[in-house]
Image (cartoon, rainbow, N blue to C red; front, side, top):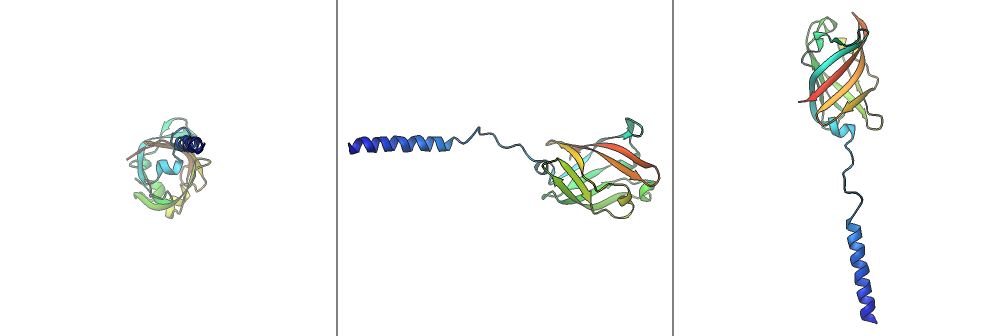
Length: 156
C-alpha cells in the first residue's frame, strides 16, 4: 500500500513539474515604444509638409536631421541644418523626452533659443519599428507660420 502511495505521489509530482515548465504560449511580449527607440540615433529618411500645402517637399532646413535618444529613453538631442528660423546656424540642442508606452506618444522639451518657437512640447503620436520611426508634428515658424510635417526616420 505504501508502495502504491509512493508511486502515485511520484507520478503527481512529475506531472506537476512538467506542467510548471510549460508557462503560456512561449512568445515574448511585444516591445514597447521605449524599447524600440531608446539608445538609438534616428536620421531623416524623408520629410513632407502635409499642411497647408499637401505633399510638398519639406524645407531644406531639416537636411541632416538626427534625433538621438539616450539608453533610458529620457533625453538626447536634436540636430539639423539651420535656416533663417534659427539664425542660419546649424541646430544641435540637448532635449528631454517623455515617452508614453500606453498612448504611443513622444513629447520633446528643454529647447533653447529660436528652436523653442519652432518645435512643440505637446506629445505627438509616434509609429516605431526596430528600424523606422515616424511622426507628424505641427511646427510653428515665426517667419512662415504653422505647418504640419511628417517625419520618417531611419535607425542609424
